[in-house]
Image 1 (cartoon, helix red, strand yellow):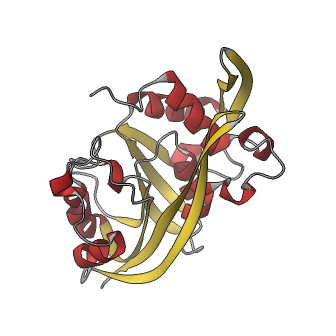
Image 2 (cartoon, one colour; image 1 turned 90 degrees about the horizontal axis):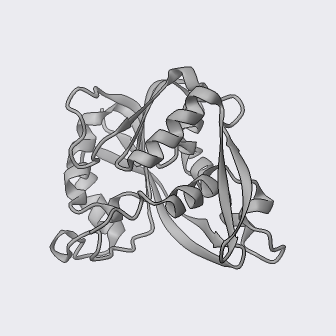
Length: 241
């Protein structure tokens, strides 16, 4: 099956989701504006205190990685999409990247994605890697973030079982998932046979203690008149000492 995340359309949509202005992402005053800024909102679940190392798994085009760099001295952003990582790295090096926004049919407008203020690009490393087979030498982290990832993995349990080794004792884990569980991404035998939150709890406890459970909307703009509005389950966990 072709990688849906290696298309020009996906790259444009994710750059817009991560870096677009409110007006670019939602041009309709009556639209769901509270769904804007999802990559920043999930990172905000981490404690505000300064940390040493952060890991962003499934970072896409990197907005959450840049946000993590505001609170972590060193951050590694990882994604399976080579085009997403290339775009994130270009932004890290040059501060911005130009991209098209599809309006309708063959009509596009132009936009510029810029890294957020107060981020620390010098402390960021972007890697293209498989979340189910992460490099063995990553070490441990104070903050681990994985947003809208686990229900896009062929075998998500592989990642979840690796997490206790990645999060330092006392460190924090933030997971977000829309719980869509589509067969095109995850075979039925690897999907939860119970409620997603209960499944997460069974796999993460007793290594982690649940701190918070919440719902966060997010928005992907396909054209100026067509949008994906979705609600993600967000859980914040603390690694047991």
